[in-house]
Length: 365
Image 1: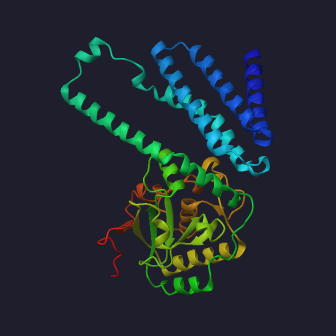
Image 2: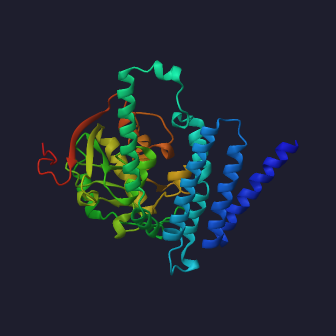
Image 3: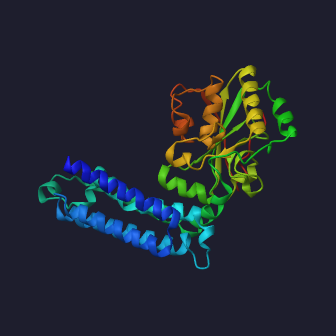
């Protein structure tokens, strides 16, 4: 009972720290919080009954995490000249960063990373040349992935994402009527086409690059289209700073954020009634209002029915019209699930478009 009470007290104290930082935090208190969590993680690590090499490696990981926290806190969350009242979203991000050492601890300890242990002579004698080659390739791939992660998690990407956060609202509808009657007329002209078109995109946007580090997937955005040529493509997105975040029409040019951007297009068979049903639901959302579910990306929670993120929207439209080909909570669906979980081969590949390559064009047949 004493141990349980101690743990409850620790959780309450840590929760109070998070809430206090969210409401009243400034540069000094956040830096102090990062150091406090770092020291707590160190004490917990060196109290473990693990090898010293493991503890040393974990300590190094904590030090790297602390460095990341300090740099982001000074450069992004509380940049010079920023007013306190203008920083609620940046403070919320700073609160999430407080958890970074705990995430590192769980990731390393649960994964039991072998690089913290040196192999014994007996282990080395049993290693074949083929195994060494395989390990070398794995190390090269890991180094390449680390380099890509460093580029994706650069300060410029984080700054752009954080500056865009005030436009979002995960608790009320802020987008209303962004789809025009012209759009719906165009969509109705394609109801006789017995397919809906699912589009996965790798845009190269800052948000997409950051997401790719955590999802380990290249394609991090999903869209729907009522026609093969993608004149009616739409999804939940940030509105390109032209419209409020929520349900918006998309243009192919929006996907070309950086060199190397590309999209994959798949066709899903459906009846005319099902396709018309999806369009009717889109009209209803457009009429009632919508917002992009930024919070749902992390906590898998939607405050209102029309607050969604991209793959959540696509899956829900399919599910409501009996077109879903796998079972999963819509808040848990990642863009790549739409292809990777197609075990019954309901999708037909249409084309890949690599922007900037003249030979990559949509077929018109």
